[in-house]
Amino acid sequence: MTAPYRQLGTPHPGGIVCAADHASNRVPADIALGIPEHLFHEHIAVDIGTEAIAELLAHKHAIPAHIAAVSRLVCDLNREEDAPGLVPEASDGHPIPGNIGADREARLARFHRPYHTALADWLAAAEPALILSLHSFTPRLETSDAARPWEVGVLYNEDDRAARIAIPLLQAEGLMVGDNLPYSGRDLNYTMNRHAEGAGRAYLGVELRQDLTQTPEDHARWAALLAKIAQRVASALC
Image (cartoon, rainbow, N blue to C red; front, side):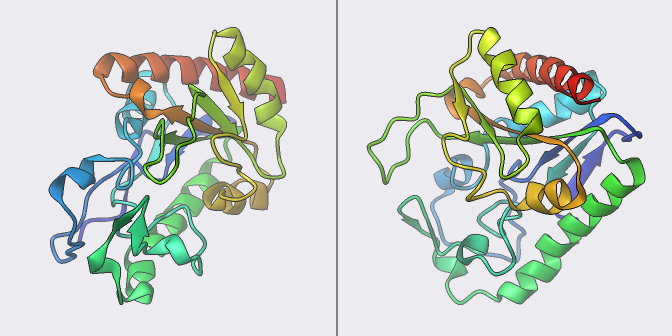
């Protein structure tokens, strides 16, 4: 059985690591979600661009990465175990028939818990100075008319140490930056709540707008920029 995560690179004490909870659209062969094929390539199934950017961070910028290897439609790894959206029966207006009546405990045991146990062990072995939490967001939800103009968002819950440093640095790069936007880390921040805030580790939660994460050139640009910003943030936190 394929693990629900991949790890690239070796973290070291005082360094930077990346976690990408929604980087994959993989669905195991024994799980049928019952949705059209094209939806597996849309934002409801995967954070577009994050897998490629995380791989570049690991391979080109010495920022090891813990990368999800299963679609959020199978099991949302960035949700509490009792969250209704953990095994979503609908997403952005699209029904997910194969999740209706699904065995939540089986999904937790197969995907969610191994992902987070491995991440906890990985972080404990290294105790990095900063965790870069990497996500991406759609410019517009199908169930809302509200535009999401931010090019990058910085998310946080109670610990905003890294966010307060990173936001002006990103703005200085000419970017339109969302401060706890397009949604708030106070509402949705499970992985960082557990592995960063809950453990006293500093983290930088980043959301990239998906029309800017489409091509290899986009991926290279974001990887280089995020590596630079994360390094500056980590240095400022010391």
